[in-house]
Length: 256
Image (tube, rainbow, N blue to C red; front, side, top):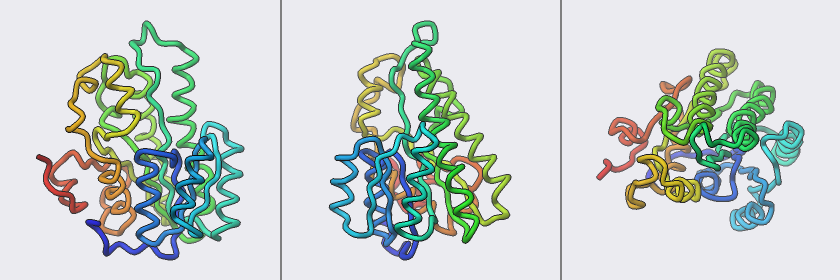
């Protein structure tokens, strides 16, 4: 591991969308750093398998982040198990179905908002009262799409812009409480979402060669680094590992 000096022992982390991709990689990396980890996802079987791999320091809870009561109940169960909440990674998100605005299904477009925006808000809303006890760190998975429009991605671009705004609002409202909020813009990552993008064949991102995408484990390394004091200068905005400066800060090798 690049940052094997990072020690999160005694900390508890909740990760949404933890059943695969960046979420699964983040859970495994946070656990290796010593944290207790709580896996939230709609797929009970997948998160149970991952939690079993990790052991007693992991708790798998089925949760639909678009449902406030689901999220509130899951956070309460996490506190009952581990006693505190120190880290929240708002990773759950979707991009399906990709479509130009004129062809978009309004109901499906709204479903993306429910997960990508309301889901992040629900996590933040549940976390803040718990983190006010001892402080905490909220990492919102963001994207370059937050500030760059792409054909077929009106839902994704709009929701990621909203998440960036939420990051800024949490920073403004809760920095004084010792609650730090930062976005991670990882670039393109070799996940199932990226396969859906490729299948859509609707904009230049869908044309990228698979070899250009970073691994979920690389993104997870950045997430763990964002939980350290060295990352606090980036609070209230998006931190990118697409830039040489960002990669160097995390300790990642220069992009080829």
